[in-house]
Image (cartoon, rainbow, N blue to C red; front, side):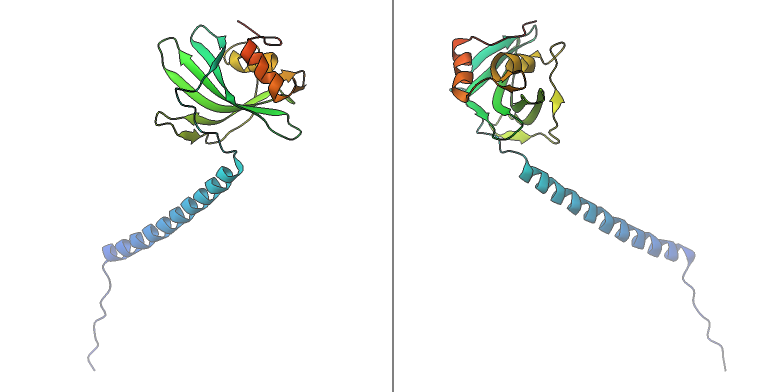
Length: 184
């Protein structure tokens, strides 16, 4: 009997086949990682507080602090006191540069531990962009970000406690009579 010659795949076809397999595995791995990341982002978004509607130009802001580069104002209608042990006050802050650029953010200050957090930043279209990883950070009375020290010491906090109810906090802004402002 005549022996039939067996055909072998050329080596380059084996490599092509392996490359396709590797690509398919990599693609599946990548898609599963992306799916996990999206699921985690949805969970984190679910836990973050919903920012209020971005104040329009027609709404009023109350100036409370000016640095060499920026003027800071707060939307009194956005101020809320959160229930719970952390004694957190949330608010919408407007920072205006001397050249006229405006930044708006939705933030919180914890009187309990003297920390601040940024939950969202306003977009030019009037919507909010949630902070990617909102984290609590210490409030310092020196250096940059003195606006937070002025809010905490002058309006929101008395020691590690709230400095009164919402009505008394709003009155301090309206009358421009802070408890103990840190002006530098």
